Length: 284
Length: 188
Image 1 (cartoon, rainbow over the protein chains, first blue to last red):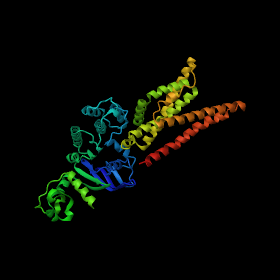
Image 2: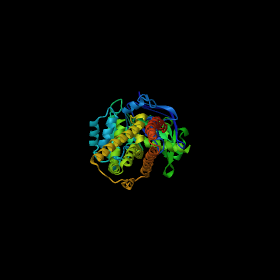
Image 3: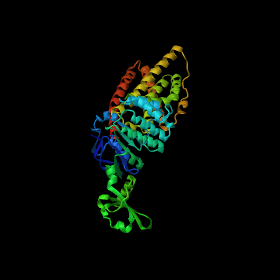
Image 4: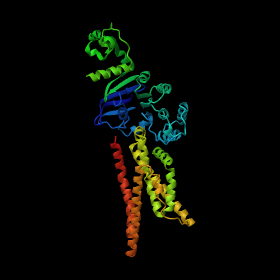
């Protein structure tokens, strides 16, 4: 079973549109959603969870169509952390816990309290006096305390310092040790996604440019570094994107399968692949 | 739905403690006008709760939690009914205490005290609406009494309004709930 399935989703907002978005997150995997500001990451997440109704196309989460009434019950198994923790700001962690205990049938007060303790979150301090990092930690705590099978995280690690971010990524890793647990995570911090994810999906201007296994992605592409003359010898369709360097040098992202095996290529990072693809797209 | 009402009660209680004190003063100092004012004010608490929800974008979060659109909409109505019911109970209790103690309190407690607490324009607007409702209720009472006196005991007008207003309220609520649900769903 797939944790998330989006099939040919269209959603238009006038100046911006999600176009023909098809995305699958297999159960038991972590999928990273990458894209520039305004690419449609948060909209995709809202569409996937039924918070927005698509103009056309269908979405299913944990095997249930998100537009069906049955999906309300399925949300019990979905933990959500949005780019901000949208709890009323006068509440404190204790009250948030009580509200969520009445919300989720599978709520685990012990787990909630242990995460509050682990993140050193004050229990009675009003939410409005929390720093951004503390707010995100509370949102993550809440999302993990009702035994979810799927975590949907929208910029959940932004605003966290590197040490806490690392700790949170470790918690997400722990979460996926259970084979039916899955994560869809969007982030600007591509290095975090590279560390964490099995799949990388790249959104650009409302279109999904690719959704691929991370290891496969890193194998499929290579970085060519050489002179402009050497670059000329490459097949045009092999070059995804290129940039000029000092002294007439060229650095280009190429498809490994379309260049001679004798050509030495550097291993790219996910961030490099994305940047080159965007440059290539913009040139078209 | 319990969780949603619980959240609103927490939020309102934190924000409205001082208002509750002012309400008590109004209730004691303004007789029946004050009582109507307090009940109408409290029945409009869901608007305050909605304003707080909007400020923290709670609706975006709630849409991804296991709340049905029906629960999200109905919880606000139930909150309004609970607030109006609680306010009515308190009003009755306070009036009974006043009568029992034969307290003579001056009418016209300065409502400016209340207005000074109204920081936002929306609260002022709600206050104005409440004044209009209470004023209309007062005017209706006066007209009914004068008709009653001049026509020699025509109490049917008052009785008519006493019957028609609750029926109208129930009918409007019955129309309003599905309309709210439809509008809420359409927002997506």
